[in-house]
Each structure stands twice: as C-alpha cells, then as structure tokens.
Image 1 (cartoon, rainbow, N blue to C red):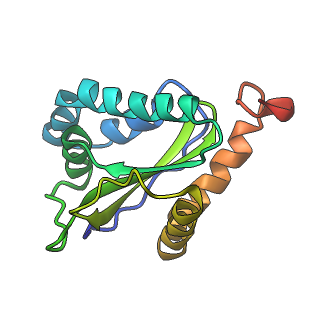
Image 2: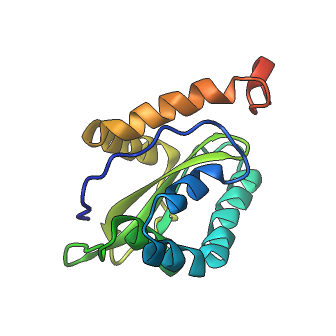
Length: 160
C-alpha cells in the first residue's frame, strides 16, 4: 500500500476519540467534511473490533479487510486515493493494548483472504514487522503504554 509520509501529532490517552478529532481539525475543510461524512459508519466498524476483543479476551490482534468508510477517512487524511498492488486489498491490523485502547495499521493483504484464519502469533510478527518499517507506530504505541498507566487510564494502578 502506498501512502505519502506526513508527520503525526503526539496523542495522549483519551477514550472520547479525541485523537481522531485532532486529526480532523488539522485537515483542510473539504477533507474534514469527507472524513465526517463517513464517521458514523467507521465508528460502527471500530465498535465491531471492540466487540471482537470482548468476545475473545485471549486475543491481542485482529486482521480484517478495511471497510469502505475507513478507507474514505484514510484517503481524507492523506488527501489522495490509497492504491494497493494487483492481487492485494486494504487490510487493517488491530492491536488491543487494553480494554478500550486499540491501535490500527493499514496494510495490504491478499485479495483471496479475509484475515480470520490468522493466529495471534502470526499477527504479532506482522505487527512487529510493521513497527520495524514504520518506527512512528512503535513510538505511538510506547506513548500510549505510558499514558494508559496515568490516572484515568485503563492500566492505572495495575488496571484490569
């Protein structure tokens, strides 16, 4: 998947979707509106991720095809269509850091799979490979790990 490189702001822990709002606020008006048009549909998809981790609390990762609303939001952020290579489609790799705290990575995946057969071990390797190629992801994860342990975070005083 080809995406232009843009610097990302540093996020603090906030369960109200503030990070998404910060990104949207920094976009030009037309791109912000495009992102907002699909926000409710994208929220339903990410809510399905939350339910997945509630149903399977032993899992730390989920790998699935990206939904159209998620792709529309990603394209609004980058201001350009997201192109995948022939034979691949956009996938999302989700890492569950704590209840209610997840990170997502947009990756290409095979067009003849849906991701449901991937094991946590396979997905952990894929996540670590992605972090190696995109060090900013590992940096944001480290920042979230610290923020989740602050007062009000899900891992404060040991968490769940």
